[in-house]
Length: 95
Image (cartoon, rainbow, N blue to C red; front, side):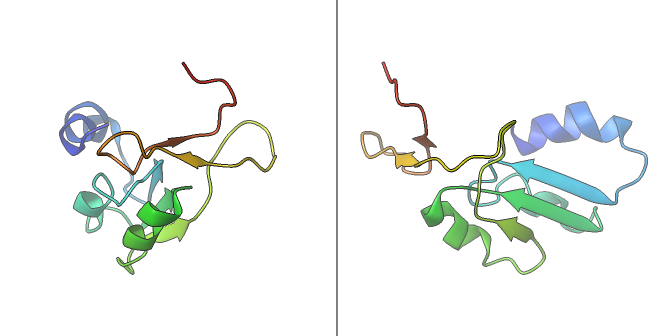
């Protein structure tokens, strides 16, 4: 979701600006704009290349992992077929 959509759709409903969670944070495009608004920002990004960029901002609390509904270890396949190398997948079936 873009920064603008978050600002338009979510911000009007937030009462306490304590914690912001960015799942699939990439390089922090949707976390960085809110650094001065929230007490803590947690970022989850499984792509090691994106994670290296994400941790450059010391105000973000970053984790180099993906979130899901089951605890398991999966291989992240990075997408080298397009110009956007930030995207990857874990599915064994692709079409």
